[in-house]
Image (cartoon, rainbow, N blue to C red; front, side, top):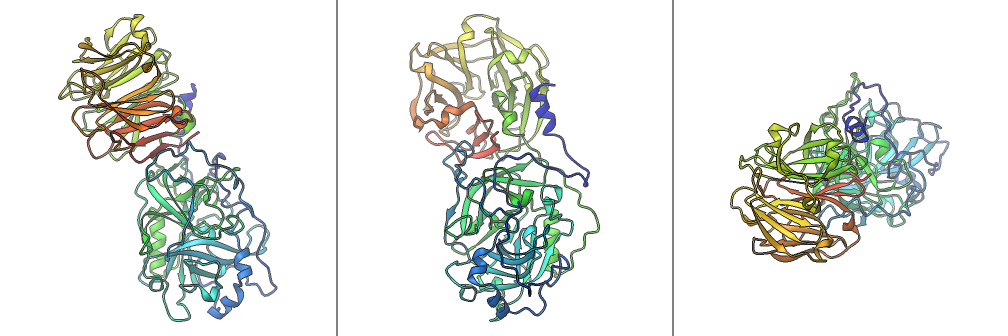
Length: 627
């Protein structure tokens, strides 16, 4: 079996037996649920261990008791339930190749900020599951809407403790009694009993969410009223979302001891019903923190679609810290939420059965073998799909969902030796059928056109555009577009090895149409590494995009048979974009314009820049994580 075929099968493997423990390979990220040293001070009068995961943890315990118990020293010494005292990889630098754009998802490092009033710190006193030692710990929690105006959301591995208090918009300079919005004792926990706390790497980590009902403050205030509102809980809409994570890293991990936030993007976590995101600095204490899909910072509330938790307690267990996880907020989440809103005992006699796992395009190791890519409306459905030729000759058609992602794939050809000789490809409607065709230039100079690939596939001879020849072995890049044509994508741009640039108009099955020389052989265009074309300027006619050897990215607006258009600089020369290995443009979003740029990077990460314009990239959207 070839390497590509092996990866192809691996990423489809779904574990369906609820009893199987899934251990993901270590990658990058903090150990959100590793065993850590006890930092709380155990006393002979400490409470007994919890008797259950739903119920009143501290009968008769008062606000005055809480103030006496939660001294500044104890709050400062608390740790995330099972994190190392010093997060491994705290001094490391996150990979710049992970999120590359200048759009909303480009931030990969937390920023400190004053916090929001609906998010705060959860302090508890809890028995350590392996040693029985009692430890003080803290996590992050958020106020969520409820009929009783008294619910918070956190992670399941944070719940179930004694002497628990929630401090909204926590201020480390103030004592418990002096907090701006006060504090609220936990009156009752709501945690799915199927969540297996000691086994944070099995599939029950999908259930790492918990609710707590809070008692009124000593002044009779309910938490939702005290902070002026609550967050709305929304189903995780997809596995590729824009989110802002919010949390409170502990002082031992982050000396600022303040709230942090991080705008980033999510993608599916293979083998588990969870999502993951990149952000450096989501250290111990952020467990349970909300993932906002949108938030009003002035009002201090928003829509929550995830929470820090899940696999390994919400973070990876290798030696760096930039991956964070969240369970999907789906049926099981809202079932528990309903129990909490109705103050109903949580009963789950049925074993946890994992929902159908999300479609995933695979990981960076697989996509490092994506040799060639081309985009077009291969099925005649009014939007683009994407064809990938792999290094072992396999060819795959990825079906777009119309919202900047892909939801399925179809193998057009199994791994074979013939297609390992494909050197460059492009797609256009050369046959005028309203379905795109694939053009291939082979290693021996032959050029072949495969009409209506979406319906006919590739398992046929195709139409020979030109026999094997020495001239076309020098056609370094080809890119189809609509530079002169008014309806169909029937023009072909060719950059030759000597720097000449040629435009062929009226290309059809068996003919290259009419040739127009746009650039004579020259040294400058020898450095044009990649070409693609699209409707970046918003006109019916397309523009030519060029990535140069030094990482510069330019767009040529108004390119016609008379010459290249006006050069519009997108990126100045830079080292990062020298790692742009494969490039294609399609119509993958709802604006019905071929302006969504897809890049496969040297580390296998694959990203989309939807709605790219003539002089700037669209916001970055991660499709495949780095290797």
